[in-house]
Length: 427
Image (cartoon, rainbow, N blue to C red; front, side):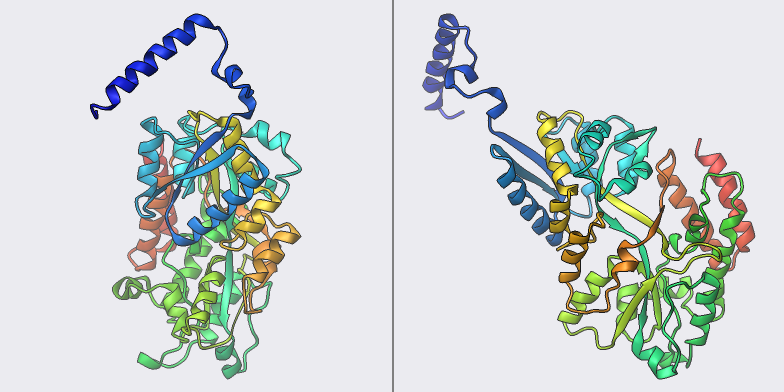
């Protein structure tokens, strides 16, 4: 401690003692400011990618303008280590009032262990303001309680190279395509060999690309009967075995990525998330995209309504140890409100499907290829189920699914192994 501070501290301590002896009034009363009007500084934790930082800065300015006396200060962490840092902060009693969850894994883990406040009362009290994101509430409940408010939602869509389809004289993919039809179309669009080969399809190596079949049918990866997932894995394998899509081994050897693959102009179709249009918009600005593209609904199993897609939402929550829980609730509620979602739409795929939000989202694009229906006019099914073993289940699906895609086991055997490991490893 600096020496010049010691006399000052002594004087301050004496003043406090004298004030205590002479009056029973609180500091708030002495200053004439009610406790409810005291300035509050909320501490909000997020990861530090540029789009998120700009988005939250604009959200904070709008929120502070509507809520005089409340300011939002940011605690930022590296995007690659955010989940670990968030866990350490919350379990170690860190001074954070609210925070963003980066994944549903950490949402389940931390919320179910008491690190986040239940928000059911807030959702009821502000039902009108949160109407745009309310459809996601049931899928976000853990043991019947809601612990996070969604602000971003990512579904799945089909993207295609119009120039390749035009060259072959083949009609663009329709908006009501089954997975079986997708595979046949991918085969039809495949041609050539070696460096000149044109592939009909590209998908990330994620297990979601095949287990979506069962999810779209309304099944659960935790049910006794997992046979509905067999067809999805079978079709995914058929794409590679037929040569219509690079094998998972080829993708790993070349470190292939759906974005860079699509930009080569040698892939007729790509199935990936609804964050992709934002990437393509930037690629067009950077002169990396030199063909016309389109997008439509993700394919679905026969008999399933078109527009049925898995979705994964990103949520904000309030620390159960927050010093300012009511103000923190106001802050995250604002982000999920229609006004807040209009701001989110400038930077990311918003969770709300309100008309004003969709228009704001559309305005961020210069390319009319963006299909708003494929993003907002959807029937949502959960990509991940919020229950014990959520992280282990992802590992099991990835490992056993790859065994089938590499030809080590049949799809039927892989599904059988998934059930066996699930029952043994997730208690």
